[in-house]
Image 1 (cartoon, one colour):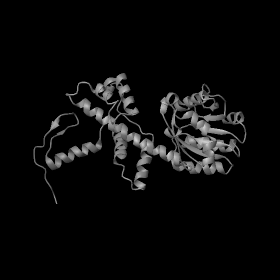
Image 2 (cartoon, rainbow, N blue to C red):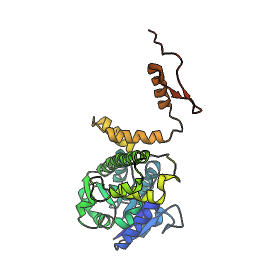
Image 3 (cartoon, one colour):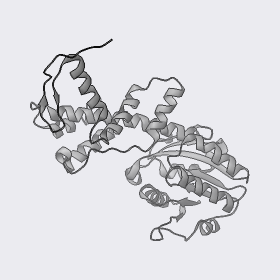
Image 4 (cartoon, rainbow, N blue to C red):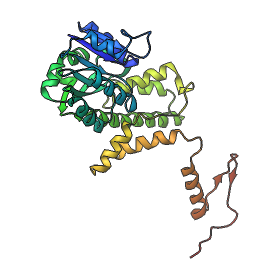
Length: 309
C-alpha cells in the first residue's frame, strides 16, 4: 500500500517511520523541506495512484487543517480518500466531508493518541467514517496501532465526526487524570512527614489501583528534575478540554472533574489571581480575617466590619 502523509512534525514524522516499518510506502509532505519527501502537495498527489489515493493529514487543528483540506479538494479526484488525524473539532469534520464529497473524495476522521511515544508503542486510534472507507484504510490503522488485539488499540466509533468526538472526550479525561496526579504530588511534597515524594509515587506504579502510564511518565519527570525546579507552572490547553466542557454543558452531563482541571490550567497562567484576591478581601470583610498585603506583610483589621442596608 502507498499512502500520502501531510505534516511531518513530532507525531507525523514518527508515524511515517512506523508505517514504513510495517511495509507501507509513505510519501510525506511538509513545509520544512529538510524533512519533506516532495516539494508540494501536487507532487505528493502525483506520486500516488489516481483514484486510489489515500492521504493522511497530520497538521494543527483549525485554520491550518482547513487550508490543507481545501487544497486537497482541488488536487485530488473522485475515488481518493482523505484521513484527518489531527485534533480537529468534531463539528468541522462534517464541513470537510461535504467539501470533499462534492468532488467525489471520501473522508475519514481519526482521533490519535500516543504522542511522541507512538513510534515505539503504537497509537490508540478512534476512527469515524463510512464502514467501507474505514476498511479501505485498515492496513494503515493496523500499522499504526499497538501490537496485539485490534480492539485493544483501535475502534471504529461511528460516522464522520465520531472519531474526533471520542478523542475530544479522551483528552478531557486526560485533563482530569493529570490534575489528580498533580494534586497528589503537591500534597505529598507539602508534608514534612513525607521524606521521599518521588519514591512514594514510584511505589504506586505496580500493584496499586492508581497505576497508569501517566503515573509512569510523572515518575520519569521527577527522576529527571526532582521538585520540577527547571519548569514553570504555566500550563497551556490544546482546546479539546474546552470543547469537552462545552459538550457536557450542552448535553447536561455533569463533568465536574474535567471542568475543574480545565480551570486549574487557567489559574496556572495568572501571576496574581484576581479571584483569590477577591476571596481574601471577602474573608476580611465578613470575618475580620487577616490578609497579606501586596508586599507580603500581614494586615489585621483594626475595626470590625460594618454592614449597610
